Image (cartoon, rainbow over all chains, first blue to last red; front, side, top):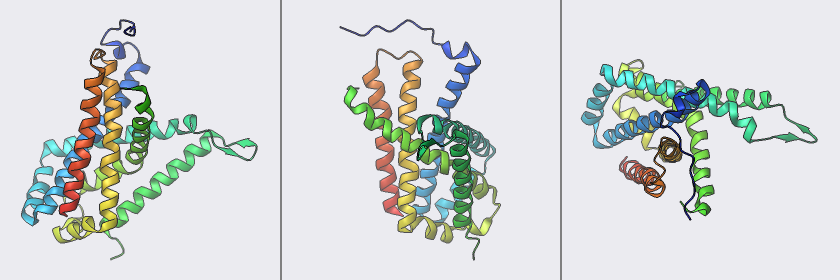
Length: 129
Length: 115
């Protein structure tokens, strides 16, 4: 017996604001994956050699690629914000008898994110040298 | 997809979601905007870039950074396609999405091995 699916218009996600935001959040993964492909190509060009790497940097500096990365950054930030804000709903954290308030979990997560981003910047730019 | 494999793909999706949330924004800023724009030229000079990414810890980190979010993409994109009406092709959709992430992971291993 095949399962029954209720018929639904393909444009259901345009019907309300909440559905559109839901679709927008799910589409962030496409930008993140596309970015990772370009990033992997960058690593590949580092492996090939200096000329290939420098040519790739020039390709990334074209207006289209800069625009793509700005868009990908916006998508990635939207993913981060939605992911962090829903964490306490999935992960009920308890401390002894008491339930840890969701906004504390969210606050700690954002603090850890900022710390991790600063750490990555320091490592990549090697500010200690 | 057989019901029994769902938790496995979901856990990769969740792990990829966490990795992407924490590390993808700053990586885009550094490699996709700062490096090509030439903001901190000496940091992205070839020898330094090569030394940084070929360190064993960096390679392990890059593997996690690229592979897990690809599985995150695969899982979400699979449900986008189903939600947009590809209900007849659930199995081909799943194979295409997770297969894409597996191919991406293998290519990542190859590239990281060349560094």
